[in-house]
Length: 204
Image (tube, rainbow, N blue to C red):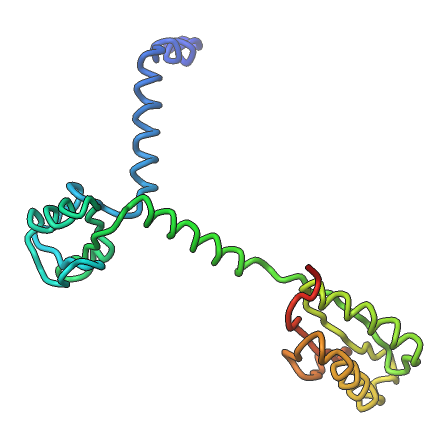
């Protein structure tokens, strides 16, 4: 019969020394997985195409390629492992990784979701309300947000679609200095909307 304390015994069996060894192994594996390129002696191909500022763009055996990099006090980095033969670049690998990381951050920053501010109108919006909402829209665009302005038609007001379209076109025209139209007035369900993107942020 299996003792109910077997689980605790197994835990005790895993000594402190073994735990340290396992943790060290895990950390080492994580580092290897994060390393995106093979460099220098880690390159496995026998022949590679060597590129770089002071390279000849020719195919060399791996030993010759490593010597070319060593002569310049630089690293040999395998940048295209699936090419035939693989392409290696002679560069400063630390600087290369920094530039790649910086580039990824820039791409990520550009890919961040853009803020979209909505402004609602009715088909019979008066001039005072229009000017009030126009002022808000200018502020949104100046801050770098997109503006989605729409006219909401309720009940029989749907017959005033032309009036709603004229209102949105006037709205876009008034904002020409601050934004550009991404989508012209378009009807979806009971709403007609226009989408505007900021030309540039004017606030510093």
